[in-house]
Amino acid sequence: MKKGLLIVLLFFSCLNALAQEDAWVYLLDKKDVTASIANPISILSQKAINRKALHNIPIDERDVPVDEDYIAQLKSSTGITVKAKSKWFNAVHVRGSIVNIQALDDLSFVSHIEFADKDLNTSKTSKEKLNSKFESVFTDFNYGNAFNQIDMLNGHILHQENYTGAGMTVAVLDAGFPNVNIMSAFERLRSTNNLLGSYDFVNREEDVYTNNTSNHGTLVLSTMAGFIQDQFVGTAPDAGYFLFITEDATSETPVEESYWVEAAERADSLGVDVINTSLGYTTYDNPNYSYSPSDMNGNTAYITKGANIAFEKGMLLVTSAGNSGNDSWQIVGAPADASGVLSIGAVNANGAYAFFSSKGSAAQPNQKPDVVAQGLASYVITENNTTATSNGTSFSSPIMAGAVTCLWQALPDKNNEEIMQLVREYASQYENPDNFLGYGIPDFEKALNAGLGFGNVPEDTEELIVFPSPTTGKLYISGFIDSSGLAKLYLFDIWGKKISEFDLNRETDDNIDLSFLSSGLYILNTGENKTFKIVKQ
Image 1 (cartoon, rainbow, N blue to C red):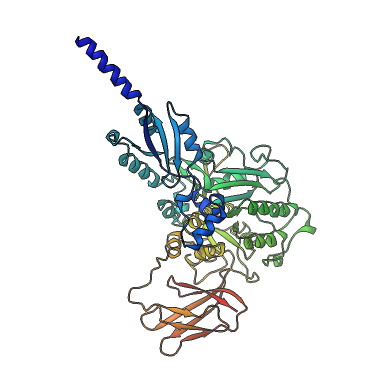
Image 2: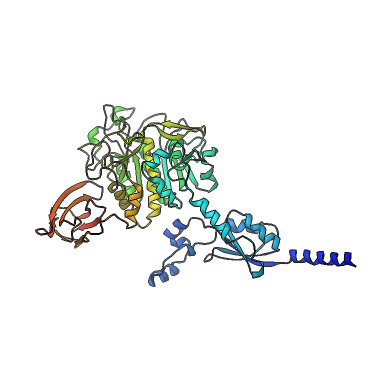
């Protein structure tokens, strides 16, 4: 009798285990949230967008659909039927046995599970797992040998704030990218589907990984997107990347400028945010095609004019200043001479000028280089999947481009020129730029805080107000940044070139005369982390 009862109990126990239960599976994240919110028509109808705008209802992460890849994995799980999904809760309603539903908790993208039968919610699924996952997300990277080149910029602070480039798109216009498609150092890039596409404009083919004579693009990309656990982390490891070959490494001819412009046009059509160009053009194999230093005036070279148009289209262009500082050419080349380009010089690991870095020239209409990053003994990952050091503004540029990409991710409401201005303004020698380091080494932590509105204004300072903007001439001042009643103001154009400075006294001065300016947008800076955009009519 006891044996029969035991069999019956086991039978009903098995039935309970196999009984179908309902549960909500909450997911940890969503794909492309930043990009989707920035382009709401991709996730909402125009009518929905209009209704939200009419009633001042923000479009947020809840409007982004549930990741279909996650749903597909749930559907393929043993004994699981997907019944419904909710983007608002980022959850999927499933049906299955208790055992099979509980097994879903082992999936990396599952945050926690709630059974409809509340008596079944006794496992440690929810908060313990959720917290442990988020702890791993926000854990500091171990940058290994690459630490100095990001620490110099305080770019690692952006990463600590979880701004790693996610949702941003970068186009790398360069020479060959051998082995990027198979190297383990780019496995993170590939596994997250952030290797978005490629094209060789020189040979007119999709393949940029084989049949090329240069590894330059691979080295450049590694400083932004490379990742070797506990050994190397690029400055924007979670951005999406398009890889374009525009440089013919076998010769130097003007057609490469045209390839570059064509690639920039494609980047624009693909919605690229940031372009990195570790290339420069000054002289050619045929000297009849070569430029002269006087042509580096910001609007002569074909590629320079193309770069300015790319800037007008809203992209942010980061470009190597060049490696001619120690030869007869010396000055910044094209397209880094463009007003719409953030041109990057090079320093060594201690922040001192690197001897080869191309210099600015008084003949150039804008301050060049704009800023600098480590370009002497920069750490890179080679096509052989090993770390090494290499020299050149070819590497200071992408190191900077990655940091800029993360900053823009953090400040999505800023446009390209505003991000560029923040980078310049919070650089080490902003008030006293020179032709070697430009505005100096940027501090991305300060730029982030300023962009978020957390500037360092002394508590006892009377708030400074300037008005009106737009103005036809006079700009009136109320309040002074210095508690002594004095103020020093600096006026810059949108490219970061200082136009004038004004010494004001609370007792005698209440305005400055801007009638000498041409119509346009200008930046007024107090020198104390407070800026104003001024429109001159």
